[in-house]
Image 1: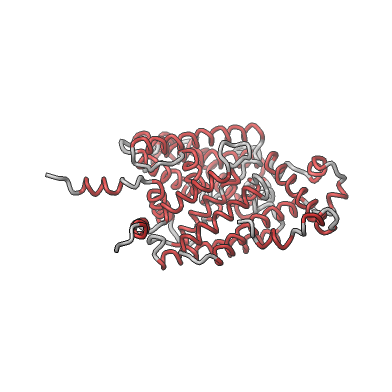
Image 2 (image 1 turned 180 degrees about the horizontal axis):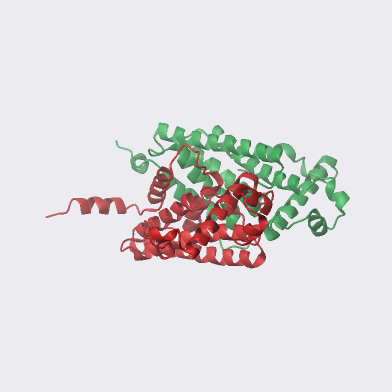
Length: 226
Length: 226
């Protein structure tokens, strides 16, 4: 999972990073985003000001404004990171040569990894309504494409027999609910590691969606007949 | 499902309702809540004022203030309705004489019914951070009790063999994600009825959680041996 396109294309060779201006700017922007996401989480979006974010970073407001012009822009950037992860997962699924169910799980695992990794815990991702209208429209449209792609993976699994008979649209809303609700409860300080959570959720999704015949087929494969 | 305690104890006999002052006040309060929830959904909590709510209701702001003192109080009331439904579901589950898995599904269906019914579509339920601190603490504490009860139902199912081996805490977060994410996407105008959605989600949860042996046992029961 380390070969996601976005990470690979953005980061320059390790030794050069400290001298690369674009890379420095990118890192500072990421640091701002992380601090802002964490502040939104603790106090709520409505109760967090640009002053608060600048104060935690120990920078002046004009310095902060070089990276983000407003709270709404920060919130929009949080959403974009989440959707980048969803799309990176869809790209991995497309590249995988396997069943629809396998592709679906590869995609959702990558999506979850991003939720755990890039922004730590970000409950604010449930909030699209505080975005300015144009950004809100972009987020809603991109989410719709991700939802549609999720539905297509499930439809593929139903067609190839790896997923049991179901309504692919409703099954996709079921699976996305599991994933999208993570930011509402996950805390770094909680008892379970991201890996444990992903393992458990993937297992529940697989047993929920897998065609009843699938395990039998696997058993049959494990004991080939002469 | 019509015999939920809250509905039964609150509503007086039909003929008297129109003359009952408490009942009138309760109905008006509900109407305000419904309008407010719908406005929060369309414009976002941050972008909706008490003026907006009063204007949609066609009442003065002082009249509105007789029912709710602030936006935050309206949001709190939305959360309370959702948690009432969760707790009504838990009560139904406790009264049901059956397996842990059966109890879990009875509870989650009732919880979902409430989400579809009482407040229509209420994405604002993902927002606890806009509540005033005391209300936020109440909502968080009550949600924690509901989460803990969900985990206990799953643990019961694992113990009685109706649910397969799993971490009850993570399985409860899985199931609650499915349910709690509904307000983020459900619209009255959408292609699926609440009943179709509940049926599909209950089936996916059952196949995801059921112990592999359970279907066999049911089959055995259907064909009793002589």
